[in-house]
Image (cartoon, rainbow, N blue to C red; front, side):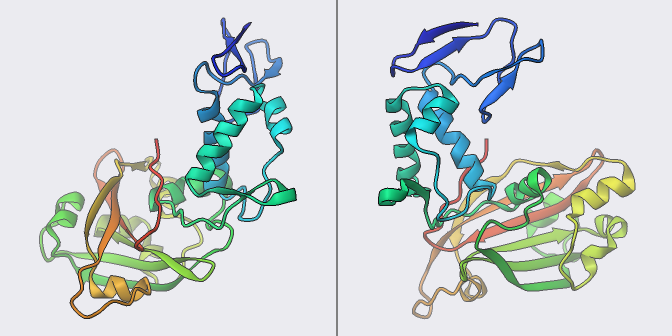
Amino acid sequence: MKVHEDRGGGKRCTLEGESCTFGMYSVPDKSGEVVAYKAPAGKGYADVAAYFRERIKDGDLAPGDALPTVTEIRNQFDVAAKTVSRALGVLKGEGLVTSRGALGTVVAQSSVVITGGDRLARMAKNGKRYAPGETSDGHRVMRRSVADPEICEALELEPGDEAIIRIRVFKQDGRPTSVGVSVYPPHTVAVVPELAEDVRMVDQFDKLYTERTGRAVVKGQTYFQGRHASQDELDALGVEVPPHAAVPITYTTVVFHDSEKPLGYWEDVYAPGTKVPKSD
């Protein structure tokens, strides 16, 4: 390994036959020896920011939790103080952290909300259904005919075909942040009948489906879109506006598949002013 100075004054490494993984303080080389984490050339501050952003997003760091000191972050990532300051500045600009006097830098009471697909990934990663301070209510399960052309096309349904629809409202510290709607066609419900039960599911549908069929569930592309909110959505999100007022909102959609067919359509509708990070 060759160590050089980067343009920010920090150190970087040129890896020769060694492995390096972002988001870790140390990584093993091929011999199994643990070596110090080295930030990639020219991206030291972005890499440090990405590490803490991911920990906040995954719920490993809760609002009010203190981040390590500048000196500790310097030592852990082997970067310059200027690089750490720039990384913290990025996180502050995103509203994820704030300065708190003697406490240093702490996680902020953020309006950031993740997508349903990212929530699924977080559960698979660390088992956390909710972020700190997050809850959900308004759970409803219904069997309805589907007329929406986008959903019919996504799930390969004919207009008027029945599907199971599950709805819930996510809240952060009691404040509604998003409405999650998931739609499952009959062939998915036949494998995971729990989807049709009007109770909160303990396990996620993808895990149950894979266990019972042996086929992996793949999350498709998440699409960010905008439109005007319906009155039902405004009511669920606690948004009070004059009658007939047009309120623009952001929503995301994603379709889940196995190797043969589509399995589910998820839509998340976000409260005005909510920040939704885009996954890589």
